[in-house]
Structure formats: C-alpha cells, structure tokens
Image (cartoon, rainbow, N blue to C red; front, side, top):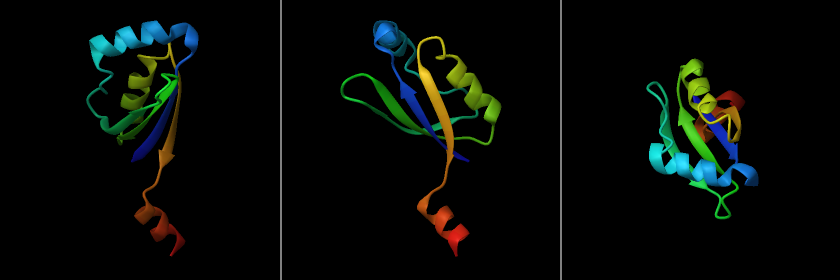
Length: 87
C-alpha cells in the first residue's frame, strides 16, 4: 500500500531536525520502502511517498521523529488504481 507522508518542521526544532537528519539520513525501517522524498526549499517540511503493508513499521518510522516533527500519513492510490475503482 502507498502512503503520502507529510512532514512539518516547526521553526523551534529546525536545528535539531537537521542534525538528526545529517546523522541518520532519515531512512525508513525494514518493512517500509521510501519511493521518494521532496523537501520544501524553505526547510519547513517535506513530502514522502512510502510503500508498506506493515502499518506498525510505518508507525515506528514516524514515531522516531515525533518529538521534533508533525507528521501525517495518508493512504494513497496511483492513477491506475483509482481508474480501476471508477471503471
């Protein structure tokens, strides 16, 4: 299943987020495949497309950052999957 993960970086935690990102790379745990990540140029957040059938693994990944970031994970469909539903 695909997920759109929207990340917001509060200005109060920006430096701590960047330090953690530099050391960890922000990689997902086993069971979650990151298809892409795009950062806002102003540093206020990012959007991630992730794929997993393991909701617990996705929750683990977001929990690792919850002390610094606001994160929303939303199930997503490809154009083809939505077209099949609408057919």
